[in-house]
Length: 335
Image (cartoon, rainbow, N blue to C red; front, side, top):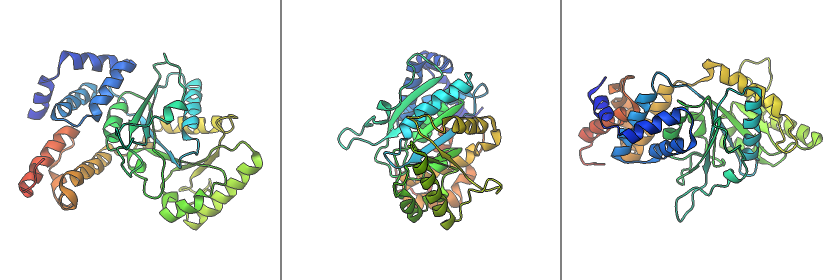
């Protein structure tokens, strides 16, 4: 145990210990309080985050992080609501957290909470947890604090669904954060050409054409998608090892929900699907360094600084180590 870890753990308050214990039993109020802690950017919050993660180590899970992205209006929220209920019906012992990244208010900076109005979960069911998060006007499709919250949720839940704010041409960061990424499209909405321009078609692991209420429209949309993907060398051939799956769904008519549910359950039970957590950690440490020290700081991080980090350090300890090193290398900058 490092000196920093001893220092962090010694500062844990009885209130925080109680919140952690209750969060392990998936009580919603303590969970919400801990998430707020992971969204707060203060030195005290950093100390408390370290204590929380240390307390969860050992008995924690390694939940599947599922990214759901797509253009606004594709029906992501309604689809997620149906999928969660279907997953629990098939496997009642599961517990699922949904983190919906909503557009930020230009005035208050808070989330506009559009997704919450379309996702209706049973109130007293501890197996389901929903949280909205403001995007902070971030162009990555997820908020700056999303990774921090995901660190907590994946220790407590079997499946964590991250719904992005809705993508255009550059919002593809959800691929870095999730173990498996699903792109939700509308039938014949003309989105395929736009995605090809941006190179977004290469990002998702699975494609979902939602709102397929009519069979003829669904088939036309599938063939259009298949043609578009051929142009960017993405295969839908199931016999091809690198092929990607396509599902045709309708949340209102329950079409394709069972097939997608069984597919996601297979992913959840396959530990090899999980991405390397240390790689994810380095990506977000690099992003934090760039925000604090600019492009030059990111160059130093990639070339030499990150080699000083060890796998035994927590994320917060790595931040402290990096910041002290960067201050010495760029003394004119301060926090």
